[in-house]
Length: 92
Image (cartoon, rainbow, N blue to C red; front, side, top):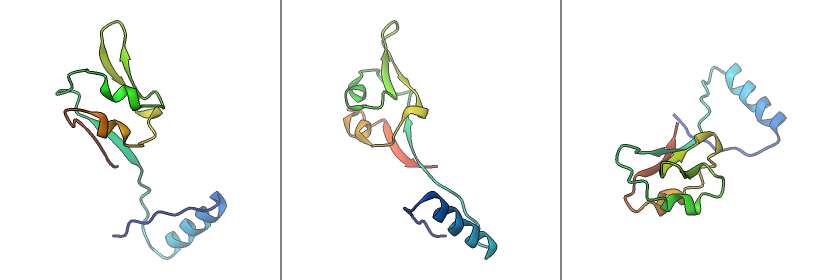
């Protein structure tokens, strides 16, 4: 197994992936994702202050933390801001 990060124009990336596939090399794209332990979360909102994408925000009616992963940029600022260390950034 080999983890590789590449940066190039989309066409060149696709050509490289096609080449590897023709050579019999299996490819699994990976991306970073934020994982929040919602069962232990105390909904303090500390993470929302550093979440500039709006993926983490407080529900004003129930005062509960809401997480919208599709908005997350995986910048990792929330992980550092969580006082209980309930937010982790990993690969899927």
